[in-house]
Image (cartoon, rainbow, N blue to C red; front, side):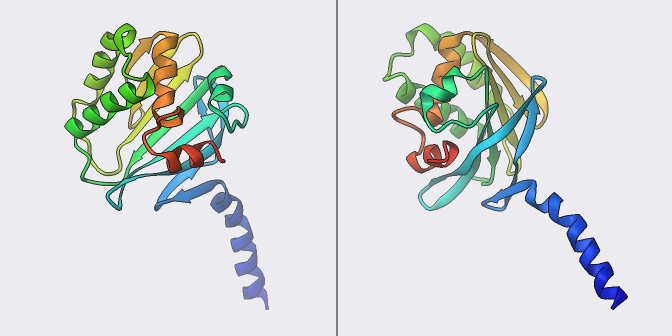
Length: 186
């Protein structure tokens, strides 16, 4: 009887740890995170796939829940995190996908942020391997800080760039509609 009680107690103590993370495509996605000294909650997470292959898990963190792009853009901070789940993603493929994402997000009108896009895509020049995590901390009125595996890679200032970056995943022509829906918890 005492052994069963001990096992029950151990299980009960572990339960809160298990419920603090959401598992998406075998990736543990934290329910809460702190970025730029702000406590954020997971708004939603999903999988970016192509040709039936999972490429990465994308997650969106916000101060308060939002189910529309406009609500996300109004928040003082929004964080998109990408966790690479496929060895098929190379640095060249990532740079091309990001460039295509900016084209789609801006209706091919990238002129005013072209230099920023070029600078941003260079942040993906190093080898990308399965398990790498990219975090884009976007702050309204300030811009974007890019982090790879907990190391700051660079910062790009400007509201137009920040909005275009968020629209890659959350805009009218997102990287993948089902991922957008999952990130916006629709």
